[in-house]
Amino acid sequence: MNQKSQTTEEALAAGMKHLITVMPFEKITVKEIADAANVKRPTFYNHFKDKYDVVEYILKQELVEPARTLVACDMLEEATRLILATMKKENEFYIRVVKIGEDRIFQRIVMRLLKELLLDVMRERMTDEDSGNPMLTMDNIAEYYAYSITFGISKWVQKGMQIEVDAVLEALKVLLSESLLDLIYRRGGKQNPSNVSKK
Image (tube, rainbow, N blue to C red; front, side, top):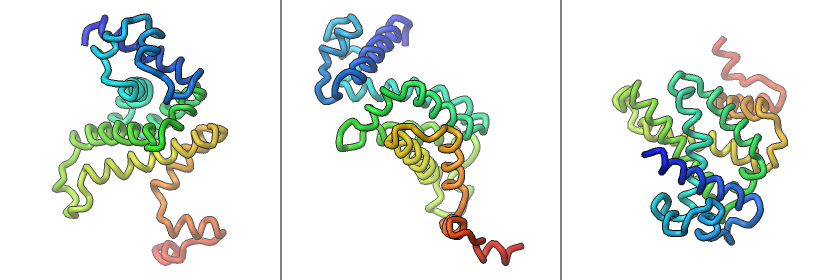
């Protein structure tokens, strides 16, 4: 992608970000996005197919791509912290994006982008033959973790991002690493008896 093309895409993305914070997404038109970016309407279609495509571009450029290097260096917690911190800094935009449409566009886009990112890293380090279990494919593992992270992020945003980033990270770590029984017993103030017998 040449620099001029990238600059136009960035201008269209900036225009979309501004529009989302001042009006309902459903009412935003391609012409308004182009006008906000100071380009002609046909120019929009040289870069994006529709306004959903612009939202995907923003999510990829702001959230997923900056986290890529951290995930590749086995720093998934730091990558997740970066995503959350970026969203909190631009909370007005992200709170509105999470509310777009009944089909949960934010969740679908972020989950797909995170799954692609996790798969890229996994393909460099493992093969599907590693597990010996046909359910534990790279695709299934990446989708599970992408879904879990997206679920946590979405719930946080739906609650107005009032919870501190470190508390969200801690909750995600617990959900992704502990068994359901451990969580049940922990909330009940007891220790899972199956863990006691292993000691």
